[in-house]
Image (cartoon, rainbow, N blue to C red; front, side):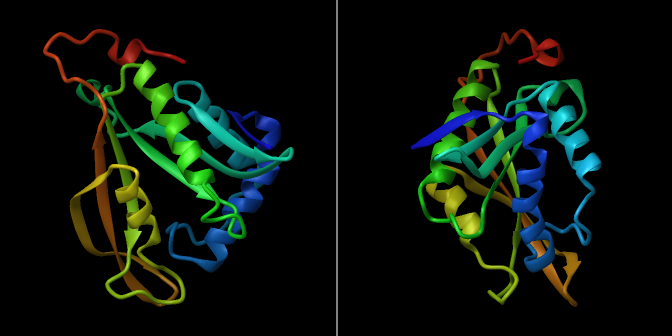
Length: 184
């Protein structure tokens, strides 16, 4: 049985286990060092002050997580959010990503978020550290490529591009309310 629920700070250890694989073995994240449990817990708590942070638990074990965060730190961007997702490396292509992103999008839409953005490491040519799977997943979820930064990330002795993908989920009317005052 799969459950999508809000993360709790006590989930941090398992979420960090999932993330650690990507830090050590891939260029999906441009972090070189896995953060400490304390730092990672603080990141989760900081995100949860304003945005949803969700986990997917399969038979009680967390196998993935997704969250949103500030797109840009200016009031005019308050209706936009950056999305992030990580699935345990041995649970990929199981449908958990779709379930998490659909739940995340629903919660963000209820908050009045209009635009979703994803910052994705992107290889010039696929290699052992990075494929185009993340971009393909986001495209499958309705995102489209909005821009590319060439050779902006350096990891494992090589340069990687970074792309921004976007998905417009709101109506974009001229009279919005809420903005920076919105809280979960």
